[in-house]
Amino acid sequence: MNVRGAPALGCVAAYGLVLSSQEKKFSNSKSLLAYIYASGQTLFSTRPTAVNLHWALERMKSMIKVIHLKEKTERGRLKEIREVLEKEANKIYEEDLKSNLQMADLGSKLLPFQGGTVLTHCNTGSLATAGWGTALGVIRTAYRKGKIKKVLVDETRPYLQGARLTMWELHQDKIPCELITDSMAAHLMKTEKIDAVLVGADRIASNGDVANKIGTYNLAILCHYHKIPFYVVAPTSTVDMNILSGAQIPIEERSHKEVTHIKTYAIAPLNSVARHPAFDVTPVVLISAIVTEKGVVQPPSSHAIKELFNPKKI
Ligand code: MRU
Image (cartoon, rainbow, N blue to C red; front, side):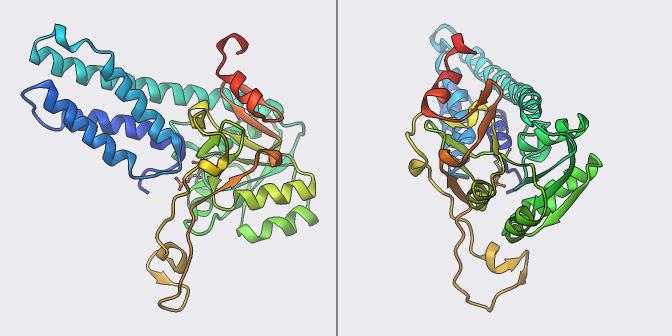
């Protein structure tokens, strides 16, 4: 969890392969490649839900495959593999940064209000991406445009990404914000005006179902009941076109100690049995729009998501 947040996981996995290619001396390209692939497996096994990790590793591997190694000396091959990987990792990072800004622009235009209050969950800002953020990137840009006057931040039990990271990021930007426990959202939606809920995503299935931090699904249901727009902001690297629906998304089960303890302090009787699915899946029908760097899908559907990947339509 030193690195977390779907887009950041993709960028760091790519640089992880670069570092693994440089950390030892190899006498031939075959042993270098075997080492890189083994490192890729280790990186891949760290987090199962965020598809960006898998996406970035596959993209890096595909770059190696197109190098015509037979035409080079061993020394030349070693050098080329390392150079190709570093170049591709830089590209992944730069593209994510650019996507952040494109989503912030598109997403902020989508918000139909001025001086509104929005609610967000988990952390989707600079600490979760290459730079500006996904949902928090939209919030930062919309605040600058005067569209948002206040952000309600779910603490995001149990790992507290909202309390620890999003509150910190909003303070850095001097954006007015209030921390709430996840269970306060329904009451505030009923008694105060919340204009929109914005969240990120760890994996979007080809039909538009969205896996995101545990508690996101609750928010989507609450938004549906209270007629509040529920927006998902994520780059197309988070879309998994290989799966038909959210039912196929693997949900990471994390340590139960993260539920029974706050850091090392026990908040439940010793030996309490706990559960810790770290993500949930929000069905597409509850999502008002998905904002990507290639366009806004509103309302989301299999067809509209497929169109994002059709260059003619972009
Ligand atoms: O377990 P984490 O902290 O990696 O989970 C992060 C989230 O669920 C984010 O909301 C998601 O990755 C979107 S990040 C821009």
